Length: 103
View 1 (cartoon, rainbow, N blue to C red):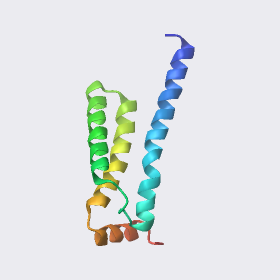
View 2: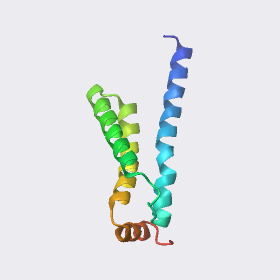
View 3: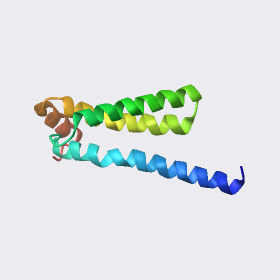
View 4: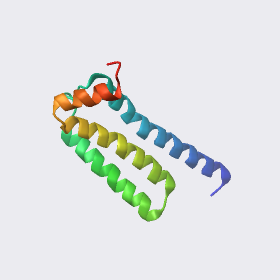
């Protein structure tokens, strides 16, 4: 593998990490700001959480830190969203107000 192809692979990996992680941040922040989770799909987030948990296990088994860090971060964000979706709405709003007192 040449240095140029390695650099391209590294850049692709970094961009994939940023996109994967950043994709959950706006949804998590919206929940913190509004306390509203009505429009979210519980099954979709359940499958997503399972997928990130499996990718994390894979990364741990292979001791590949880029997989571990990326999937641990995405697992945390998507699990937060799933938990907020599953909680009763009154508790979700209370958690939201605790995390964002300005709301």
